[in-house]
Image (cartoon, rainbow, N blue to C red; front, side, top):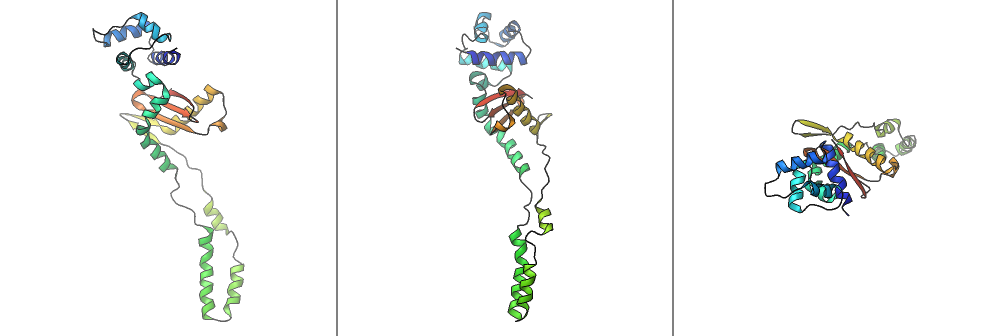
Length: 219
């Protein structure tokens, strides 16, 4: 009945390299004397038989060093809670990906000589013929304009600084994509949307693919 909760608490214990008995002893050290907690209760939690009450669940999340919402409801709700924290990182990525300047449009470039020809047309009666010929000789796509439209690929490096550590956001995003590919067996083309929420204080990144599949990786 509580298999998903069981898998999350066991994954957190594995990250901390804790056996069931070792985790039980650690909990007893952190819990208040009045908090009832037995090895049998822990076996029920890890076995998917039952789930601890809210107050005890918060203590367990604190001992394991994981997010309470994630331990209680899974990565999806934890991801939603992290959206505000991830907003700055996403904004930095968007600003980095936007081109710094737009290539000059063909319409603007080609209109300048036409404007000059109209001036000549007003001043002389014979020059419009020459001006029209000059306009006809203007290539539809000047070579310099083609080169201006060509853009080089930009190498992205987005780094999140937290306390004394640095996290490469681009690398984390690719690791999350690969984690989904390994988990689902899908193809890279089937990834229509990838949302990544980084929580450096927990040393984890939570991902959601196509607003459906979710999971997390260790930073």
